[in-house]
Length: 228
Ligand SMILES: [Zn+2]
Image (cartoon, protein in one colour):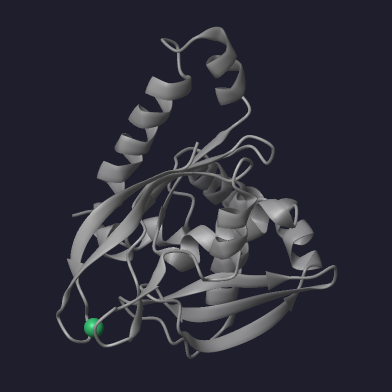
């Protein structure tokens, strides 16, 4: 099921009171249209009825895709400093729905799902791209760490982050994005074979890989964002 509930908010442009159907949960298999909207950066965009300006509400929902083995707690970009708290929440919600106390059918589904927590629209879209293109999201984060070590002058800041934005057979396109709205600052292309190389790297990379894979917040920023 995918669930929406009416929410009151103020238009960021003119301040008019608006009611929006905010998403509470998305089932990417039963609602492929919603999954496509996320991939096309359209989901939860709306237009103010008073001033006609367009805006997008922050994501705050759970995402389930049984076919692709994905379960995610999706949070607004602004919640990132509380990533430890939301990791715990993701584990708790997932355990309640698919864990030891759930029925046998739910437990069987749960065993096939990865548990993730993401912050902001670009991070969610990135996880969908990984699943769509057969990319291990843990290895993708290793790739970002490798790029960060190689590249000199980086446009990183508290609000700019590095995300996968497109994947082909040969090349991956990554971009520096504003975490909140996905506006692109700069982009780069890297050969996809770098992923395979990193998967076979030495002991220090394997330690990083194990740490990334051990918890729901599979994102290199967990190593640099001090938990609030
Ligand atoms: Zn308005």
